[in-house]
View (cartoon, rainbow, N blue to C red):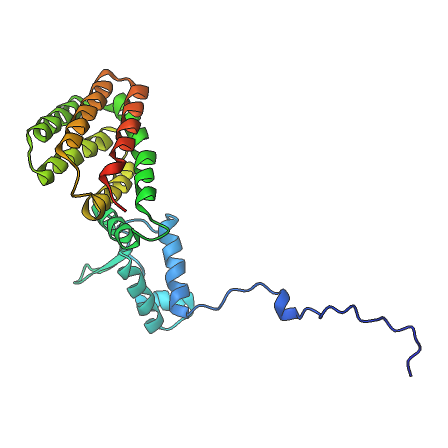
Length: 251
C-alpha cells in the first residue's frame, strides 16, 4: 500500500545502460590482423624489405586460421604495403614505397574528388599557394647552379612556344624545377598531383596569348629573386604569380 513517501517521477525517461556505452563495432578477424600488421609497418617495427613470418606462424601468433591470415595479407598487398616473391628465397616482404606511386595515387584521388564541395578549384589553387610559396623561399636558399640553368631553359622554351599545350608544358616544368630546388621530396610529391589535376581538368581554353606573355614575365621575376638568393622576394613573387593565375582556371 502506498505510504505517500515514494519518490515522484521526474518526467524524464531513464537512460538505459546500453545508451551510456561508447563502443566500436567488432571488426572481422582478417581486418583486425591486417590493421595490427599495418600498425607495425607504419610504426617502424617492420621496415621495408623485412620478411614476414610464414602464414602458419602468423596464424598461431594471432590465434586465427591460415585462411584469415591470407585474407589479411591480401588487404595489405592491395594497399602496396607488402608483396610476395616466389621461389626458394621468396616470401612475403614489406614493400619499399615509391614516391611516384604515391604521387600517382594522390593525383587519382584528387582528380576523383575535384569539382565537389570538398575539393573545389578554389581549394586546389589555395593549396598551390600554401605549397609553392614556401617552396620558392626554400629554392632561393638551396638552389644549385643546375637548377638555375633549368629555370632559364624553361623560360626560353616557354617564350618561344606558340601552342597553348607546349607553352603550358614549359610553365609546368618551371614550377617543377623550383619545387625540386627547394630540396624537399615530400613537398614535391604533394605539389605535383594538384598541379596535374588543375591542368587536366580546369585549365580554361579561352586564355588569351597576352595572359601567357605576362606569365613569362612573372617567371623571370621569380627566377631573378631565386638567383639572387632573396628568399622573401622569391616568396612574394611566387605568391603574386599564383594569385594572378587564378583567372586561367574555370570551375
